[in-house]
Length: 252
Image (tube, rainbow, N blue to C red; front, side, top):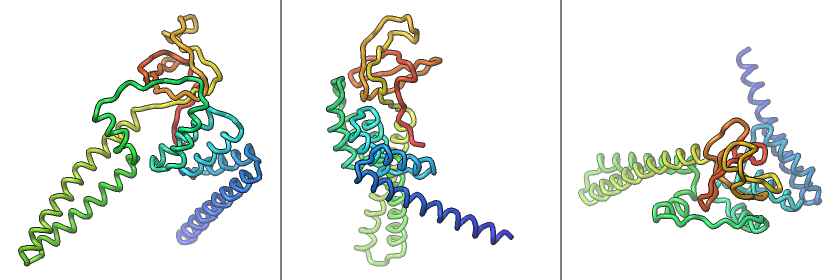
């Protein structure tokens, strides 16, 4: 009986994977036929099955772009990059789509370490950095064993040096992985979905207006009080906005 259940589980998993693949092909076909709304619904069916990938969100972003919907376009490109920061197509299209937004926000000048983190370390997600860590741990172990069992002095020096370098890189990658994980979990970002939003000085409808934002603008979420979220812009401005007017960039 157990063997039958295990077999049924694998068959169901296989059929589910096949269905997701078929849906992806159908969605691509709908996109090519300029049936963008239908393509989006089909891509979202794949997402509902728990199958997520950078390519799916990238394609959804492309479909929304064809429909001239700025906020969903940017939102899905951002999701694609959260999964795979190396998705250059999504990155380039995101840059282009941001030109369609009304708000032009200048970032606060960053320190050298912040620039290095953004321009280099964040090119990989924390999951990808975890893979790098595993690779260095494997290399370190292999080179150490080669050093230990080698009897030729020249080779021993070489294997010892490479094992030390591998372990140093291992420690560095572990630190980077934890740092990127911390940033990913604590740096909550969202996209403005309402056409125009009045950002308040306090989480009250009667509060005075701090500034105005428009759809497609990216914000950082700092806090939440009832139906309000405290947001921060790249230029340092802070205010409160109704939760329903933004959509947090999360992966299902």
